[in-house]
Image (cartoon, helix red, strand yellow):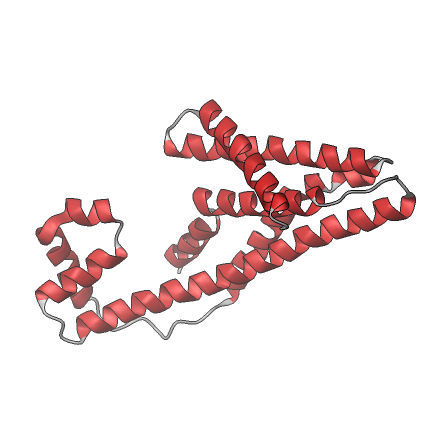
Length: 220
């Protein structure tokens, strides 16, 4: 059980997945706020924009949490299906091909037929099949963690609408905050990949800005 808990936590905190989801949330929020064009600032307009921006973040967090559950269930079903086919009498070549499909291409190539055959035999020797794929309490806690991560990560884009009186200035500041956070996201991903953090941060900030402009121009 401790191993399963650690596996679930590792999946929730996977740097690439989590940072990528935060980036998607930032792009969505920046696109949403960037479509606003107000001629004058007013209390009602600012309140409406603030609620709309916050609602956007909550909606993305909810969608991301649900997709986390879908992905988790899909991965478990795929794993159980693989074991069932191996236990079902698939020959060595077919079994190796099935295992190679679920491994990253470079790892499958590096393992070669010998490594794949060793994995196939170890998996066949595994006693019994996993229980039918289903979601448990830990999975829902993980989904809630994803929801909180995305909402809190994109919440800084809402702050300008809370503290500033001018709607257009709030939009500009919100977008600036978004660009800075995109830079930080690129910085984190580049560090995880072992690349230049400055290059990764700048590339993500520029790419995100261009994407937001393109989405707005296309009517997104």
